[in-house]
Image 1 (cartoon, protein in one colour):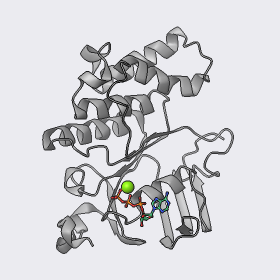
Image 2 (image 1 turned 120 degrees about the vertical axis):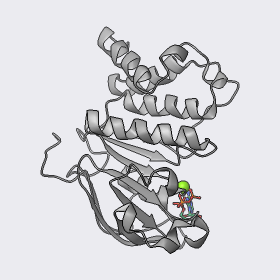
Image 3 (image 1 turned 180 degrees about the vertical axis):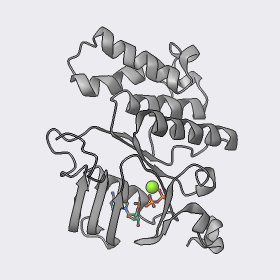
Image 4 (image 1 turned 120 degrees about the horizontal axis):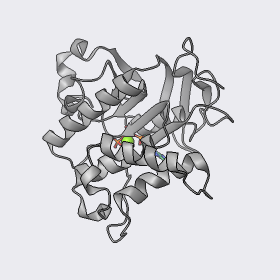
Length: 242
Ligand SMILES: Nc1ncnc2c1ncn2[C@@H]1O[C@H](COP(=O)(O)OP(=O)(O)OP(=O)(O)O)[C@@H](O)[C@H]1O
Ligand SMILES: [Mg+2]
């Protein structure tokens, strides 16, 4: 299915969700995200941010309501590609895999597991590594990079598939404020240059409120949806988000 301009990137209609046998963790969520948006998703621990992303990506099915990704069912054949940097994206620290190998793995998801990568794929991999600012570390083992650099490598892995939508779950956990800001700037650039739709989960939305075009606050349901500047002052302090 081609990506058409008039269809929202993400559409949720009356979505509720409970994990098997558990209580409802999301209740009656309706949401439309336009293509090319940079959506920040914030809220307290356990508020349902990761669950919401997993529903959008088709990794969980709603118990009620409907999810549409670029007009079709998530994970359907021929659907536009999505990139996902999960909350716990990390490798065992002993793994000697290099930055380039990590990003090539992301490209293989387009080519199929039996590759081989063609010259054009290698060019995409090189360009993507450069784009995230790791060109001079491409041959370095991932474990020798700082936490923030490793996050960039995981983002490059997701980008190497040239996704129409990029979903990032707390990509800056354990990353210093400066790296958070430079990551936010990188994402803003990707959005402008590639037109990719970005869903960015962070429970510290201070890091993203300057770059996102729209902010959701999720606490079992959507309790705020709007421009970051319109967020009621009381919610700026994460300790009050509970
Ligand atoms: N695989 C699972 N099985 C059962 N319950 C789950 C599972 N994953 C999450 N939950 C529950 O669903 C609720 C929402 O969790 P979720 O991970 O979506 O929250 P979150 O907003 O991402 O939190 P955090 O900020 O800690 O990452 C929580 O009550 C959590 O305990
Ligand atoms: Mg989470």
